[in-house]
Length: 124
Image (cartoon, rainbow, N blue to C red; front, side, top):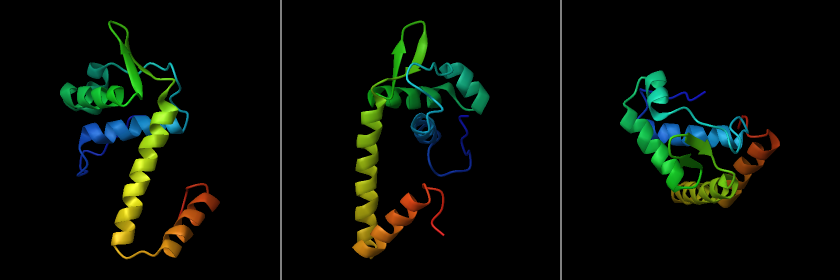
């Protein structure tokens, strides 16, 4: 469920952060669901507990999860708006980078239309 790529240039804590958001968006994790403990998840992934802890701290800071002392970390019921806002920010940044790289508004619109027509699966 919490797959990470140890060969990726993306830091592991960031991969884990994004994976929790992805699972939440796909409704595989729902509000109130309990996450594995930092130690359990670190052991399962074969990474340092500090790495998982950093991902959890960032998720909590951004309102995606919340922690209860002695009980664990849970998916927040307020995370939908947070995820949407983060997605808008990331999309805006990506669109600016695409524009700076020479893509026209028409090319970007075509890409968006293809994504929405295929349900986000392929751009072919």
